[in-house]
Image (cartoon, rainbow, N blue to C red):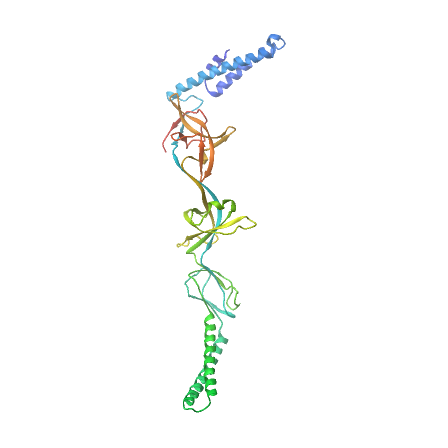
Length: 398
């Protein structure tokens, strides 16, 4: 039985073809083994037989491929490779931008910690956590019973001192009495007026007011507890404006400048993406982390973004106006290097071809191709992971 007959018997599929070759080797192997002791059938003769068989296999493979091509041209299946539908994009030059991305956190531009300026027990807290407040609104009040008593006492003393002063003033104008008595009465009035004003100011300080518009973020003390200067009572935060702070390695210092536009994203809100200018660049490098601070400032009028949220900031390092760029996901790798699949016409048929490229920088899901592709090439996009080099393909539209 010769190999041609076996191919006819088993068909032209890849598996049948492999089976036929295997059977051919089995048929020839016994004769070779049986004559192993003959000098004419020594190692050199065996190598010559192997070479002859390989030539015959290559000849048959060429004929099989030609027959398959004819079937494909007629729209028939070969039994080995069906025509694979794919989509392809024409490679065009475009602007390529390279970025590095760092993590960042949001911070409220306007926030305040409320604490009293005088000692006193908290008599009343007028707001709850999360309440919106306006600038000047009374948030809490300290107990002022002792202070109010002192004010009333001073007011009574001031009335008496005022009466004495007025009488001394009339007598002094009539040149009755001494100047010392007049001046003492006048000084007593002025002293009591000053003391009353001080007590009144302290009474006003017993009311704690909001210094900014915002929301009550935290209430630390409770009614009845002692409040002292420097002791936090509550925290107010405004969401209208936010800082976004990022610590960047000093290796990227040359790429970051005040006023440059950067791309800002928030993982919690994938739909939020904004280009904002750099508000401030730190003037020092942290000695331990070898990083510097970059700060952005953004509007947040709807209050959607919150302080301490995680953010991602992408800073552009360079851009090329006319470059060959492909989606990074389309690039494969084998022992010969990086490659993509392109659509080529071969003997009137469209086939997939593994095209090796020199891969450049990556950025935002795209990769710069330094060589291997040129404008006008057809890059297989949909179906790239289902084709092999030489597979027949049919290009479809999305």
